[in-house]
Length: 487
Image (cartoon, rainbow, N blue to C red; front, side):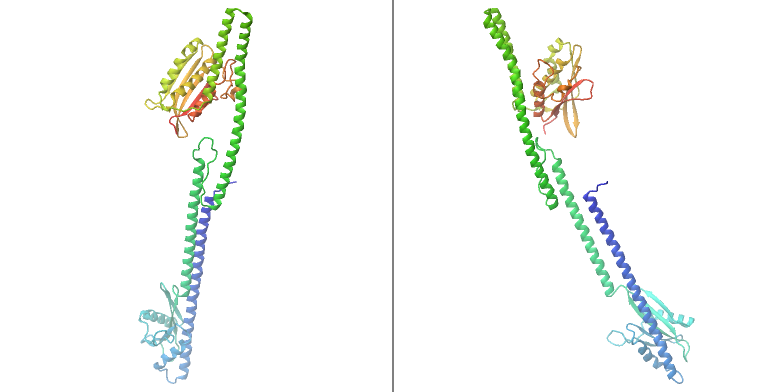
């Protein structure tokens, strides 16, 4: 099932709104066109009836007159015929003499209109000539921008040949109340559609910006230990309900995490205390046994050997406590530009004797570093971490094996990082201790304390970096991942 975003649905609604407005405007124009067509047809019917009215009155006048119809009687006859047809003018036309009579009884001017309209004289003459030629009524239309001129000619049969009656009217198509209502409707439609489209666009833009701000706040880097940021209100009521829910969920998550961290810390303290007691108890037991034997024997030479053994056990306990202090004390970093190639060389030189004694070769691979630019790290702390990693590798590599120290500058997710690698050709890590490899007192050697890699992890965390064991490689490889510069 396809999931559409709110933005896509609002855009679809906006398009539908414009489409419905266009369809409504088209229907309004169609209705208006039909209404104007009806007006023209009604005006044309009225013009035809008025022309037939002139014919009837002319015929009646001919029946009453003896010896012919006087031309002076034509004007009153036309006026009487058109008196019942508002807005229609007309007259009697002669093929030889032109206009014989003219009347416009419903003219709305200041006085009666008695002059033939000169602007329409040619149209009147043409329609009358055509009606006389075909001997039946002829109508013509002359449309313009605001009106349609309707002229009809009707032949008159009487004592005088060559006469026609004509009538003329106008249908106002782009003027009057209907046109005003049409324009008002279109204007209202345009205002509502444009206003709705503008409001919808403004809402969509503002809503998208608020969503983008929430997304940016959720995606922004956060301090260590913070799972969800505290989101600020957006000003959108529905969206703020989600923001409040996220803030409440973040608060509950922080409280739950604090409880889990406290429980884990307490459990870690318990494990640490048990491990420390176990590690210290063995040297103390050995020292006690040696001291008791020296007291019982009374032999000065044996007492000397016993005291030397006790001093060795004391040194072991001292080394253990020093490692514990290195593991637990707060680390204040002194970041300086550090020559990594020199750092690797010093680390290899420090353990050169142990490597020779175990017949293990130490190789340095630092070709992936830039020539001039140096990372900002605490060289002393990182050297301590490398010492622990290298010592761990040397102790697990069989004679004839190789330990490689490597360094390179890489870019991960747009951030420049320093990768320090320690690779050995030993048997690998025991799967039983792999999950807790960087935890205190986890070791695969009977004589080890299990604090070396734990100290490496703390140094990495102090630099806001990580340390890990690389999977899916043929040799055992540890990588210390540190930021090139502090963020």
